[in-house]
Amino acid sequence: MALSSEKRIGVIAIILENPKEVQGRVNSIISEFGGIVTGRMGIPNHERNMGVLSLIVEGSENEINTLTGKLGNIQGVNARATMAKQS
Image (cartoon, rainbow, N blue to C red; front, side):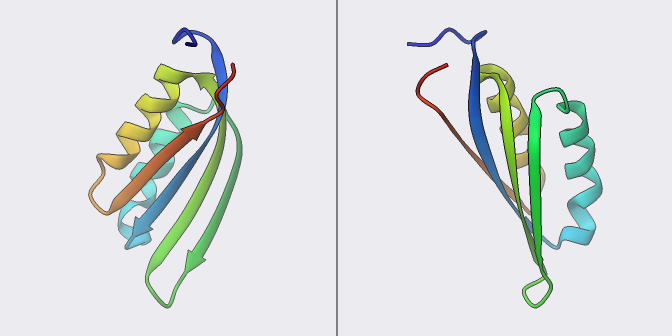
């Protein structure tokens, strides 16, 4: 089992409902954790008024889970993380 301080690679999938209303808060939180974000891709879906983001992250399990939790606590935002089994 990996120690929480060991760096792991992961992906955070984020779905934004009504992105114009939440994107400022989402971007602010992602910026707070900019040290662990190594890649970002966003795809808007204007027809459904939704947006999908994927973040590639490299950090401790605690850092990745904290970022995911903060994002998921925003109303209208769904965030889930998956991490590599090895550090």
